[in-house]
Image 1 (tube, rainbow, N blue to C red):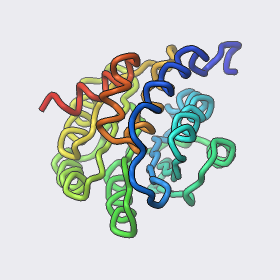
Image 2: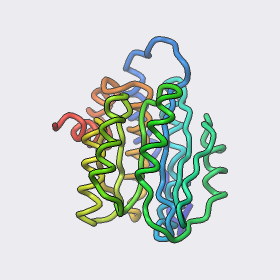
Image 3: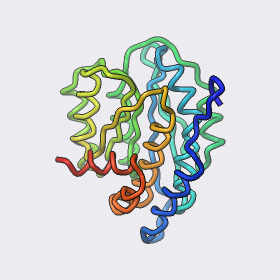
Image 4: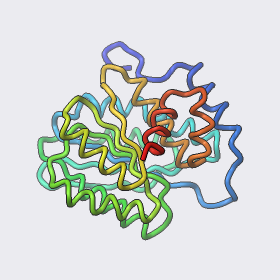
Length: 232
C-alpha cells in the first residue's frame, strides 16, 4: 500500500494475463532467463521508486508461471553513482534490495545503464532491459549508439517513461527503437499501468514475441508493447 491505495493489479487482470501466457509453448530447456531492471534513483524519483517497489512483484508472478526469471536491479543517483545488484529470482529479494536504496539528487546516467546491459549480455544471454525514468539529460547520439549495439546483441530495451516531457519521450523512444524494444508512458497516479508494463516485459523475457502476441488479445499492456515493437 502507498497513500492508502493498492498499487497492485487486480486478481482478475493477473489471472487473465497468465492464462493467455500459459498457452504459449515453453522454449527448449535452458538457464533461467535474465532481465536487467534499471531505475532512475535521482531525487525527483522517490515517489516512483516507492511505486516500483510495490508493483515489481508482478514481474515475478508472471514469470513464475512460465518457468521463472532472474532480475538484476541497476540504479543511478547522486554524483556519478551507478550500481548493479546480483541477479535474484524472487520478488522479496528484489524488494529488499530496492528498499535499501534512497534516492539522491543528480543527473541521469542512462549511458552507463546501457553499457552495463551490453556488458552483461557479453557474459551471458540477457533477454531484455527494462528502464524506468522521467528524463534524458545526456547526448542522445551517444545513447543511440549503445542502444543499437544492444539491438545487435538481441537485448531489447523496454523504456517506461513517467510524465509528459517531450524531450525525454523522444529519447526513450529512440533507445527503444534502435534496440528493438518498446517505449510506453505511465503516470505514477495510475499504478496499474506500470504494473501491467512490467508483467508484459517479463512475459517477453520468458516467451518472446509469441507470448506478447497471444497475451495481447486480452491484455492492454501486452498490446502496447507489441504495437511499439512491430510499428517500425
